[in-house]
Image (cartoon, rainbow, N blue to C red; front, side):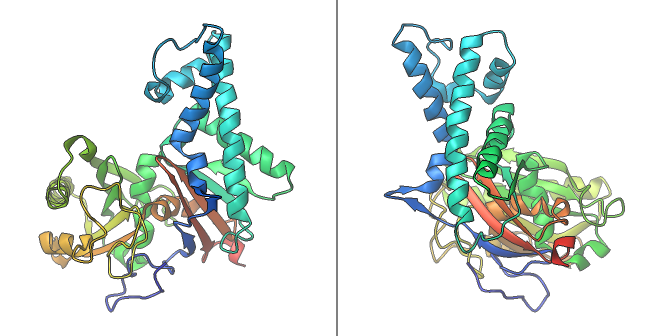
Length: 356
């Protein structure tokens, strides 16, 4: 993780450990279980594997309540509907997969809690796409019960914001407080292995100075995985999306801050380069010759009448930062993001009651 550094303009360094609201104690921690990365046991794919295991058991008797549809093609919405439906056998299959996944999630969480970086964690919020479903909420609740049965004194809760919004709203906590004195919104970017999402995030700080009322006013999304662009074309598309959002925000009368907060997979260095973990992004983002924040400042040198500032951090960190307004009653909080892999970060609160 990057050393704590602050630039001459008072903007936190990329991947910084010290942020205005919290200390980032750890992120992108990679634990292994023998030869396997531990996070793979609690990923979106791991749940699908559990579902397939129980379907396979039923197929031996010639009956599968889901027919011929592949397990990976069953949507979260379809599976949620099964949980509340009349097909008992299908419901039992999904509940069995949830139980298996919850056991794995509890195992992975237990390992994190036993590391020095996650010691004394009081609350863990779970984000990522899997959280946005009833089956995800049940798995999280079950994992919490399993941990408490083993005397781990930790809460485990779904992240407050919709996961897609959390990856943008959290960028507010990358910005210094003075940014908000004359502005009511920022630009945020959430880069993933499948999509790039950009948005205008309203601070709503007059309603809630703690940013608990912040929301995404407008966003653009591009599923780059379908287009398989080069890295250069991906950056051009990102710049185009941001410029369109700037125009829309200005036309709507927003006082847009000259600030862009970026959530990106991997280990983010203080100069804005990516050390590791960007293998699913289009092109080579780990090249020493590539620096996304620099590229964006070159393409968008000013927002309004001010020079543009860009801060980039790990995507799990940024998603976790969206939870900052709701963790003021604890000192130490972790975040797990369940998606293609398992993102993770741990924070120490600098401002809340837990600090006293």
